[in-house]
Length: 47
Image (cartoon, rainbow, N blue to C red; front, side, top):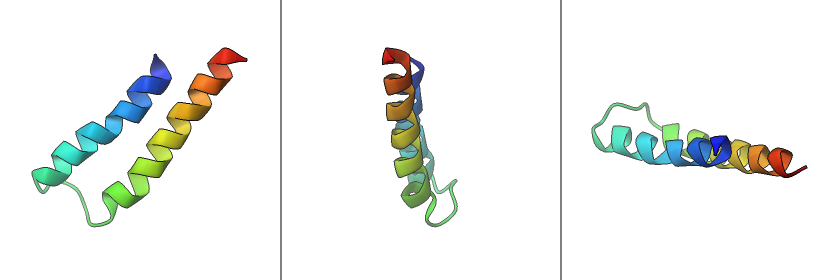
């Protein structure tokens, strides 16, 4: 569940970007990091 929440945090970032509340390049940095950490968390939970 934690892994899914980490991956879902990108949706919050997209909303903040739509409101103009994020610095330039924020999504380009956050999306791969959040998804990667989410996937690794799910994999660690399966091990």
